Length: 391
Image (cartoon, rainbow, N blue to C red; front, side):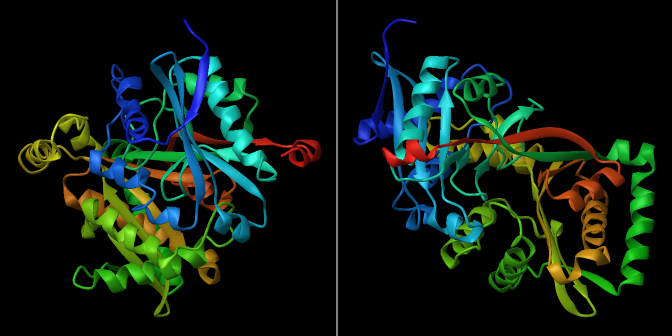
């Protein structure tokens, strides 16, 4: 490759446009990548509009060879994460790069130096920009991503590890299909298990009330913050984040696949499945230069006329600590998978992600016969005392 790699901070409108549009260059010939809606990517990267940036501090950078952009990265610190998790780390995200070790190392070194100069202990990623966004690098299962899950080329793993980063944690995604569930007896087995657990532990499950979504999402937030409180990386959801979550999920939310569980009448857990609108986005093909109203018209046709969606992502499941050993998670799993069957339109489910340290949920998925079909990985690079003292 001709020319040395230079890394520059994104400052001008032209810089931002190049940064914004770069994924369409990287994945131009990839059959699996699903381009995001332009408005969603703009809302994600706009530090004035994205509520995450009310508490994040960070910068965007782009790598260049001559006049050609070859990669992007964000470096940032999340004080709420450090406070909630009792550590002192920074992050990298929005990482995209061509298959070029020099470019990748230059970007990752720039992000690491940005973090190190603030006397932090390590840099972790990729994450864009919280656990509610793109989280982890795909290292197994290079097929079409489901909604709101990150995707990348296989070579990204080689480039990140080649820049001196090591594994911090793996994140699992599990798959089930109507056909395999019927052939293996999973559907009948899960139904019997669900009924037994619910009867024995006085568990009831109700669908979300679509007439009171604001109140229902507030209940979800309350359970979520309790359920995930002891999970590394969790940060209690702020009111602004809840508003943004309602706005985001409102674009994709289907109340037929959202349920609350109660034990002896007390709210104990929730589960939420999201129809995989990536199937529609892939066909609508949003891209720079095409008005979004045109993209949305294409998406609407594939959604309402072609009835393209036959996948669901079980994206959110949580059980309050006080009810962890009562089988509430099994009852919720059983309820939503039965809802998928009864819908007559869902053929596949993706349950992800589940952190490898969440032994109970991994065990539940494995005991139910779900297939571990994708793995994402979080990386880190730690700094020595000498590194930090020269920041």
